[in-house]
Image (cartoon, rainbow, N blue to C red; front, side, top):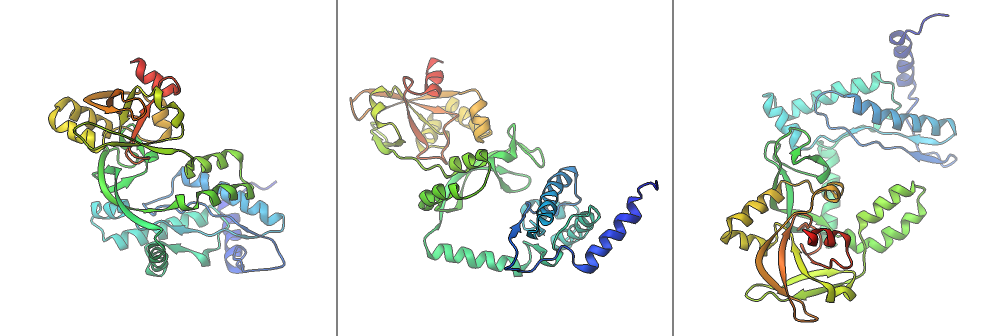
Length: 348
């Protein structure tokens, strides 16, 4: 039996695929369609083993569906319009456009050598005007409908990449890309009113054939809940507004917990260096759900009390590292008798 010679055999097969448009696809009403989209890579240099893993999985699924008779569309593109790519170009003293397109050419060649079945005639790059003009068009429509809005909110900020990081991109308080210590900053950002569509999004999850684990993640992300807002008076200061799904537990509230970025916390920090130091430590904390669940719950009293509206009791206000300004009002009422996390925190 002749040994397998990948260089000659694969090159011949790939040439045949390209010449005959094997993976190019057009609409065909007579066949069932299947769309397989893997996350577009950043054109940051070269593919690594993580790319190979991800795109192999997508390609296997696409080929399997083709064997079942589906009309399969598997496109490829480049997530090419971010600050990390621009900073890398500046670091290498190369114009960002040249840097980006050179990397795209190189990585495209790598993907073709791997033999993935992409419809290359549909290739796109997010930095090209013919692509982002449609992003701009869509955004202006969202603005007109009142769905897009701007507000100030805390973010994870990488001072080296000069960009915002998702919670999952903060690893032990540092940037996943450059290992720089991440800062928490309050900046103006754009938001979309996803909550306006919460009911529809939740009900339509029952219509998709997704793993139950993925559906659960989506339900948690949509975050629809039913409850009420309650106002706690704070003598000498603005009142605290909280949201609770359990108004029946108001009598059991023994303390209030606020986020490190809450205006009341920042005001207290002006008078107390220890509070300021604690707030700074909180700003370096990974705020992903997984990290918040596992980390030690820490807090500091700010020497100010709130008034329970149902019984008039004075209850202390604490800054807590598990309360985030970007969720709800940035303040919660804590009821140790009905909440495990509150109970563990109160025991300290």
